Length: 81
Image (cartoon, rainbow, N blue to C red):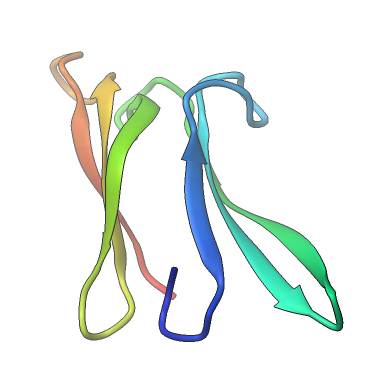
């Protein structure tokens, strides 16, 4: 959960390229709004994100993907608000 009460998460598969995604759920007036933050392509951005998400003090979101990247062995990714 981010500092504003939004829920951020990942999907192991799915997304626009079927390689996983990062999303945000924003709560407002009793319902949730889905926002796609990133769809992995299995290229240098990786694929199949997993593990715990981490926010830094500036609100940047960090995580890992187990495959892809420049050597095919995974990546650490960052999403800046």
